[in-house]
Length: 330
Ligand code: ALL
Figure (cartoon, rainbow, N blue to C red):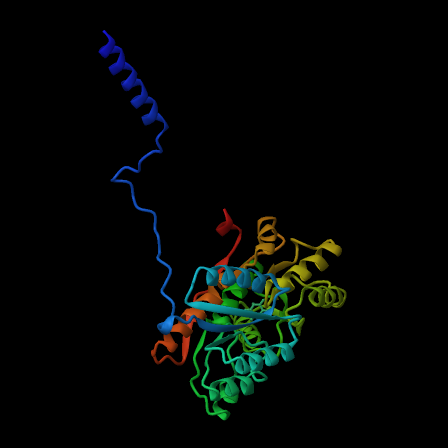
């Protein structure tokens, strides 16, 4: 009798322990993807990377910068230093950032130049000092590069003319022939500003739109707001606006709001920053272009690592663009 009680008590303890044990993964459960962090570079030293961004006040670069830093923190083989500008036209900060990275002997410099000609001499200095440089987002000027002996220099970025044309076509389709439009341009010294204007102009011609005016607001929200407020007085019959980036589209929509014309005057932008999504939803913007900004710097760094590993890369490595309308957000 005693031994039966002992066995029963033992079973009770076993059952209790089993119920407290942590669940064991079934052998057939799919394994979690555990991308092993890459090993540090040869010799155990991390590759030092100097990343030169544009204005971190622009949500496009803010999101990109935060994502790149978070990604670099998971990579023991990379030691990242990131520098941004204070405003969209502050190219002196970029020039001194590149020159500091040269002094610091960074292994790799990854640069989104605010001015396609103005940054070429700094790039040349870096290359002469034996540093690998990757140009991304805004292409350095081919003629200035050739004059510096750097023809066919590697560029990683989108086809900005193609992207702008996608946005311009969306506007052309909505307005039809004769639609009265305005282009708000980016910073004139930047190649992507020129390409986007070219792309918009192709849509103007193809859809037989009437171009009332084309002016720069240097990529900035506040400036675009002022410029658009004035243009609304000058051209009260405007029907559509092509903005070369979303920061400026935000300022344009604000001007249209103040004039009681938002939703009535159609606006397209470029970047697909989080701030424009509610405007696409509520019809204050017709479309934007996703150029996958959050991944841009990371991809350019990875290409730089390939160059450092001995791959010979030159010319244009094209990254994607995609038209985004309300339908894409649902
Ligand atoms: C470009 C980017 C974005 C951005 C703009 C402003 O280089 O591609 O469109 O909005 O610069 O800095």
